[in-house]
Amino acid sequence: MKEVKIESTLYLYDTLDELPKDVVLLMNKAIEARERAYAPYSNFYVGAALLLDNNKIITGNNQENASYPSGLCAERTAIFYAGSKYPNAKVIRMAISAGSKNNQTTSPIPPCGSCRQAISEYEIKQETPIEIYFMGEVGKIAKSNSLANLLPLVFDKKVL
Image (cartoon, rainbow, N blue to C red):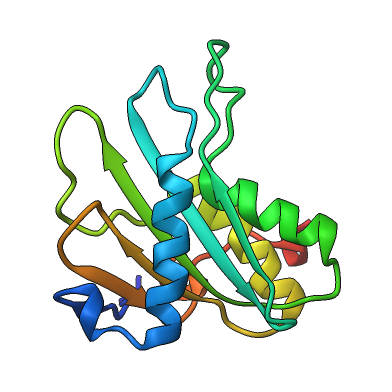
């Protein structure tokens, strides 16, 4: 038996003011999208914003449904729309902001497992990493240089 160690590296920013201006703009778009989310069941609101290589910004938010689990997360809403509308564009970076009506989220909220898998499909397809910034409502912002950093043992088409 051999032990294999897998590590991930994140970068933490204390406030939005520490981020580059273009990332602040993208995160503000994610925050605006979060405020428009439809989450009457979980009261957990998420917004995502993508910057594409054609300079378009695509936003998405979570959309819940009384028939769980037929809703859709913000990240997948945004990336699926980007793939549909701009199939040849590459995703440069993604910003995510999540908040709860029940209590204030103060730590960075990363994409869920389903979203990580969906984002990985686009990162693999475009053969370039997608920077991912994520935060709660307030507080620190985390940055991952790629989705592969958040999902190192990816399930992809090579195994099919």
